[in-house]
Image 1 (cartoon, rainbow, N blue to C red):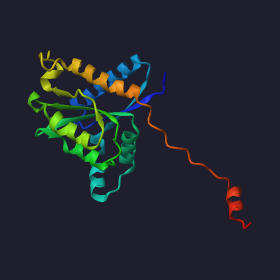
Image 2: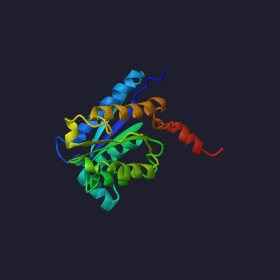
Image 3: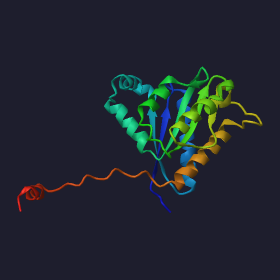
Image 4: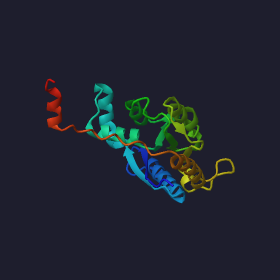
Length: 210
């Protein structure tokens, strides 16, 4: 059994500290970790907090150049084995900061990558943003989006759910299990090849005439 850790990145677009968006991302990541551990596969989790990258993202959109911190975040997402993408919902869609971050990433970087989409909002009436906004975005990027998307309205944090939506913990567990299943079956992302160092003497010898 392959026990090499898989790399999971949580992309959180919460605008406050703390935020329900980050809380949902953390709960999903922990559920994925537990589900994968049941299959004997450790999970390394990294969180990319977009609030801290807002200025760098704006500068990159204007200049075309990413600062070091933004470049590191983009590399983490690109090299991850799977993603949890969580955004607050405004005007029935994802936040501008969330969309701008994924605009910075190479369009081919998420091809085939397992992604769990989630969102938070003040009312359950915005829950369809997951299906008409987030899922099409990641489908366009050719990611593999798990079937269960998780939306958490204010009342979900302490509510009992209903027969159609289940409780928030139930939805978190179902979505996490789907993502963990893909991560466990997926080979870890290939590590960048080490540069081959040619000794200086060998380079000089190659320059000498026969």
